[in-house]
Image (cartoon, rainbow, N blue to C red; front, side, top):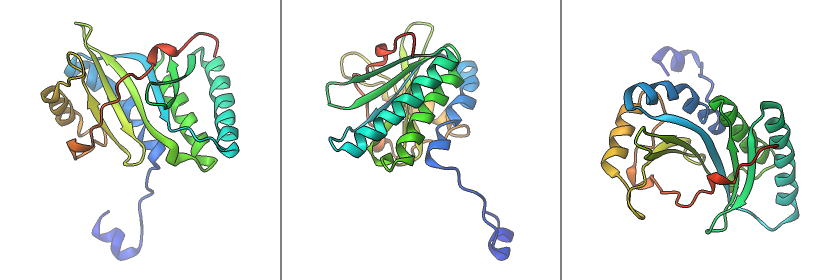
Length: 196
């Protein structure tokens, strides 16, 4: 916001936390050219499930919306629980933007029904030529991205994560505190199947 905005009472519209997620789609060309990372077209949205009927109803509405979108875009779709009890909406699509749009739609459907706080994060998968997986995680509560690069076992390639964050800070809203770069181990991204 400039000084003139303050003096004249103008404010710039703030992008919603969900809308910030779309910036990964525009950042993909930079990831490909500068880092040699290729989008795999796989991503997921992690939710903390609740046992109340309102959440189950909102979850059902979200699932119907995402299934309809998946049929239209010919995306593969899956729903799975991980070892930590989180519910995952998994999308796989050759058109990266379609995958991002479906995950966005799922987050909006839950938020519109009052369950946005149950969204843990979104994860988007990339790969290097050598086959190494690199993930970008979007924290909806903080409206920021951070890289997650698994190493051997349950280790992480912290140096590469820091480098990726530095390279992408002009393109993505990067989480400034590496202590908030939580790993998402065991994301069931293989759960997507054809047919929506």
